[in-house]
Length: 233
Image 1 (cartoon, one colour):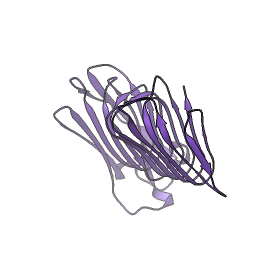
Image 2 (image 1 turned 90 degrees about the vertical axis):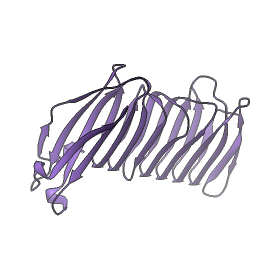
Image 3 (image 1 turned 90 degrees about the horizontal axis):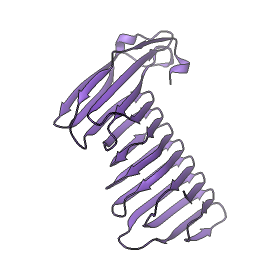
């Protein structure tokens, strides 16, 4: 997000001591969010604010709080919004290896690297990606406009939903996955190296089937316009 803006300032890093299996909740109006695996006992949040030509860096504020072992981060913008006074905040965050993530942004990309846990990643406009990561419990990746990319493992129980209104879904599952697949694209193709049934229509395609043995997770992949690629790692 920062490339289209003239002014910027990097805020002091915020460091939170946490116990085992913490959680991070982040809500942002505009800006990218990158979460990397870091130390086992702390969450470090680095925020960089941007303002366009007529914008004021003081019009966007970042708040920090905690509830037990959950760290809560939120941005709030003031003033009248237009292209000339737009503001955004890019976040670079490190978390312990096992951390539950709940990240919602209105406009901006979300990237996760090397983290395990339950994840709810939602962007109204932006790509969502996770690499070398492990999903547990029920997890959701959802964007209205942008692609979704995932490389890693997921648990053999739970529900895992990946959905984009306009964009492709590329997923590579490592290890020995076990799941029931429901995949749909209204306009686009489905390609997979797993043994499931793929049916192509005039413009779109569906795929359904069971992979592995019980217990099985439920994996849902859905795009209204874009391709779906699901492969073994």
